[in-house]
Structures are given as structure tokens and as C-alpha cells.
Length: 174
Image (tube, rainbow, N blue to C red; front, side, top):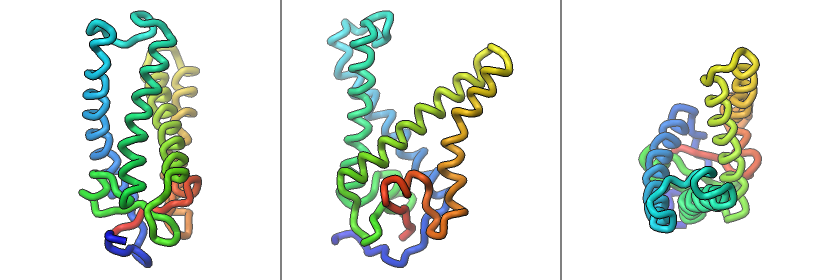
């Protein structure tokens, strides 16, 4: 393995994980902007919305964006266990035997992360749109899985999140 070994390394704490996540989200946003720029000629420069292109085209576009995101995270995780944000914050994703995860684990990790991101976005949208306390409650319920994912870390003996458990990976400092 060309990466520094992390066997016996301490688990990464929540602040470091969140900082790397913010860094990676900024990089991902740039990737998604460029990916969108590449398909805008197909729409005549119009925004890609269900009203403008139809629901089918909109769903294909969303799937395309998800594949771009999977490409960024999956390739980084399977080729050394680090995204650029993780490198900046000196953390690494690995398996129990100190290897970079393989594609099935990366896909599980990404799919759960995507589901959590969609739930968080939907929850925030509901919580802050006008519509009464029922919308706020529904929004809060959609945010619970995101909080549970990170709140699990202090209760796990190896400081893993629910996302780590689902993908059989761990995030370590080095």
C-alpha cells in the first residue's frame, strides 16, 4: 500500500469529518456546475426543470448529477481512501484490514450519504417554507436520520457513524 498505514490510528473526530465534508461539498459543487455546463447546449441554454424539459429529462439529469458525484467520491475512496477534503484534513477512509474500500462498499457509503443529503435538503425546505407547524415537524423528522448518523459516533466503540457501519468502513486520522 502506498499510503501511510493507519492500523491502530485513532478514529477521526466529528469536527474533522464535518470540515472535510464541507470542503468536499464545495469541490463537488464545482464538478456539478461543470457537468451542468456540459449539458446546457442540449437544452438550448434553458434551466433543466420539470416544467422546461419534462419530468423524464429532469430525472435523467438528476441521475447524471448523482453519477458525477459517485464518480468523485467513489474514485477517491477506492484509489487510496481519500477525497481532496479528506487529504486536507488528514483523514482516510479504510476497511478493517487497512485497505481502501472496494466499489461495493464505496457505492453503499455513497448511496446512504446521498439519501441522508436528500432527506436533509427536504427537511430544511419543509422546515423553512410557510405552512404551519405540521411542515416544521415533518422537516424536523426528515433531519433526524442525518443527526442520528453523526450522533452515533460517540456511542460506537470505534467511533464509527451509521454510514461507516453500513459500508463496513471507518474514518481515521493519520
